Each structure stands twice: as structure tokens, then as C-alpha cells.
Image (cartoon, rainbow, N blue to C red; front, side, top):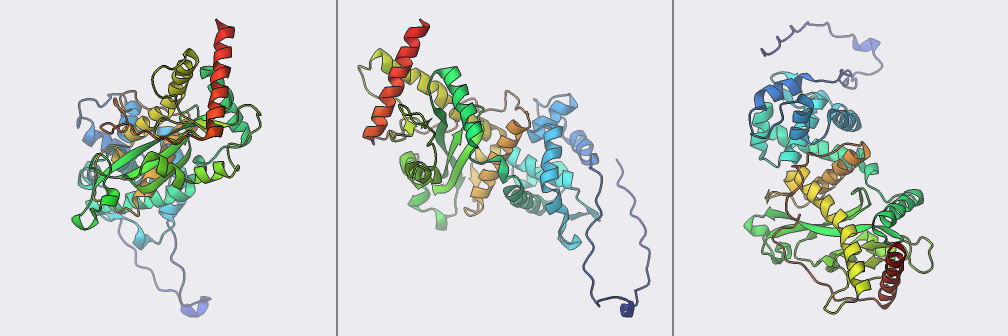
Length: 393
């Protein structure tokens, strides 16, 4: 497609300042423009044969490159549009005399997050420079952090009740509000920043993140920014959800015999509001049944992280010298995009989710902390499952 002809500039006479209320006027913002779709056809034509697995059907190809459907893409554009056009013209990215549309800016940012490719490669795919990719992506992240935060929040009691009912109906565990898990975001660091604090148990430099998910793999809570050298149990104790649950401000719904709780693996402590599996040999039939049900629920969190890292490969690939102050924002926005897809009824291609564990190569951690009240709650859950199993047999 030939580039559009540049319009001729028309000289205008300067206005008489005596007729103005001020000698200086505010710069006019760009006029609202209709949604831009030209960028997509140009991008698709340029990149349709860049990989062996690219779908031939247009809508599926769109999802291949940007992970989201066109409908979800339009919604994301609506969230950030005001921020991406509200700056003075001098602050907008200019390519060959044309301002990048909001749609193209969002596409560049999503492609950078989805592919995890270098900024140079992403820029080449769109016909823009590396610095443009960097600026556009960060502006998008800043806007999403502010405009889309309502997609990741602790749910209202009615929604919590739906999760509890869904998990009990599927797995038999009563009063369960979700599952918790953690993963490492691996990165390289300059020699001056390569301290032992960031070196984890597998000798990688990494940043930890922890999530709580509901029955639909939606993130309800997320914490990150802590060095990967921490243990999972220590990360938990630095998180806001730990403080809220310990103080009785969260997971405090009524049910006398079994309180509201989360499901976590053996890396977590056994607490009144956090159930972990039974360990050791010689487990009773009831304990084994509990472990089977427990694992099924915990798999929801494991799969959510595998989908997150599979969809937004920037979190799965080794990040090259990231700004550790900005990396938590990138992680958060990827979590927001994950939730937006669920909230919009969107879906991932089956081959996008990681085929192996989200923390492949990391040995399982074991926490030996056992709270006596937590032990009693777990025994009640175990007994409940035993009775339920007997009634259904």
C-alpha cells in the first residue's frame, strides 16, 4: 500500500492578541478519530507468513498475534484511549509525519507483552523504531495500571459465595474461596545489581509473584516485587492477604465448623484459612481422599499461572535487564489482561498455555509450619469429605 500523500499546509494569519483573553492559549488536543483498522491489515499482510502456526482465518490470526479477540481489543482501547490521546501533540509518537493511532499503539504494546520478543523485532513487525516500541508499551502499561485496576480486586460477598458453591459442587470441599500459588519471573541483571537477594534456589535471578484465583481462574489478589530468593511461605507473610486474613478482615464468612479458606500446596504453612495437603506415609483413606480433592482445586491456580505465562510470554522468557522498579507494573498489567479476557468471555488458543509447569525446573518447597487451629479445620474438612463420599457410594 502506498503511503498517503501529505496534505499541504495552509498558512493562517495570526490572531490579534488584543482580541484574545490571554496572550497564550492552551494547545488544542487532537480531534477524536474513528477506530483505526488499517494498521491491522498492513500488519497482517506483512507478518502472515512469519511463523508456521499462524492461522489463515483473520479473527484467529488476530488472536494469535495479540492473544485477545477483536472485541476485547476494542474494549482495551476504550480503557486507555483518553490517556493515549490526551497529551499535547509533541508528546505523541510521530512516524513519517503521522500520529500513531490508539489502536496501533495498543497493538504494539500487546504484541510486545504477548510475544516477549525484543523491542527491535516488535518494531520491525510494525514498521516503527525500537524507541517507539519502548515508549508506547510503557505508556500503555501506565494507563492500564490506572484504568483497568477494577478488573483485579477482592470480590464482593455474593461473588465469594458463588465461588464457594462452585468449588464444593465440583470437588466437595466446603467453604473454599479459591487457590493460592506462586511463581518466579526470571531475569538477567547487570553485574552491579547481581546481588544474592535476587538469586533464587535454582541460581536464577528472579522476581517472585503470588496469586489467589477463583473457580474460573480469575486473579483475585496478586503480590509481586519481592526477590526470588525468598521462600514461598515468607512471600506469603509479606503479602497483604496474609495480614488481612490473620486480622480477620478477609476470609471471615460464617460457617462455624469450617471457616472460609484457600487451598495451597506444601510450600505454604497450614493455617486456619489456608489448607495444605497431608504429608508422609501411612495416610488414611480419608486423608488420601482429601489430598486428591485438594490437588484438583490447587490445579486451578497452577493452570492460571501457566495460562498467564503462556499468553504473555514476556513473563515466561528470561527478561533482559529489566527495571526492577517497573517490572511489578508489567506483571500487574499482564494479570489485568488475563482477567479482562475472562470477564469478556474471551478464550486462549489451546496451544498458548504452557505445556509444562509454570515454574519448570524449580524443586518443590516444603513448609513445616503447622497451626493447631489450622490442623483442626483440615480434620473437619477431611471428615466432611469422608461423610460425603460414604453418602454418594
